[in-house]
Length: 400
Image 1 (cartoon, rainbow, N blue to C red):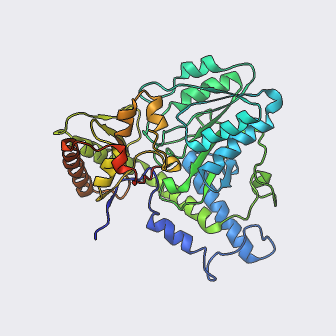
Image 2: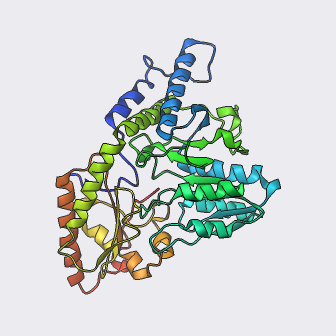
Image 3: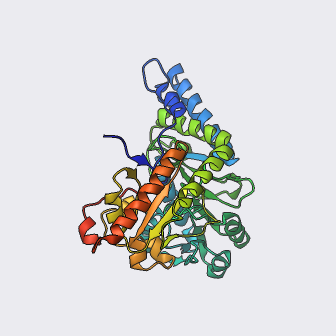
């Protein structure tokens, strides 16, 4: 049995071999296995040196100061630290927060928690192309607004928000701006020196690093007050306690270094592959790309196929690893809340599949996938029924 063609890079990426090699050097007795907080011997010193080198590599990818990088277990924790931390630390200044209904669950559930604590939340509705209007943000700001959190790139439809314009509006109003950049770091050029972004979340496994490690960028000149969410030994300047996983941090740093070097070439190749994939649908009727084509990361193609249920299509596409819906809601039979929010009806939302491409995708894989999709969609449309009842056993694997 051959492996299915992997087209789910937005869910997670395979670890780059160079990253894996760097990580292995921090695991064994002969490697840099020490505790970075052990400052009384050479094992700890070497581990601390490796961690700080990775902090510099990560900062370089963002054009940031290494002191602005706070290690976390991933973007979910970074989002929690940024949103809860900023809201609770600045509560005396106000209790109004702004986000959107198409954020990742790690953001939406955090805002729901804060709402239960008495905070007032405004949700900016996206346009039909999936973008958030800077004008709508400006109109939603109030005297008591203390934090805005809007994602850079949407995890389901790959649409890019203009965080430069959104950040400028927040800066002018004196409001903190956080962006979930899990889907953009390593894929888009991000210059924190030019952007009015106070807090930015990232996760290594979205750009060929290991799972279980991420970071929160905290702009020094903004002097952001954050209330820690994990208490203990006072690691990361008291913002995030816990023994640092040297091997994972080194992996993140190496992945960041490679991403900085290959950003242009990776994107050019991936964009070409995505366009090649979509051109393979020329002989297929009644399909549509969900979200803006122009304001979209290179590797994302979220496509709906009229007359076909997405879960049924997934079951039939056994030779492709793709996804419908979010991994955090994969057991739900409800259509994607993101697609619903940008105006898709239930039927079209249920007929949508996310294809995502990456560094290791090949032209042969793309051609095979496009042909398989076209043939399968045509076959399913001939069947009297391909509804959700027949495909309820399917599980999907889409995450941010």
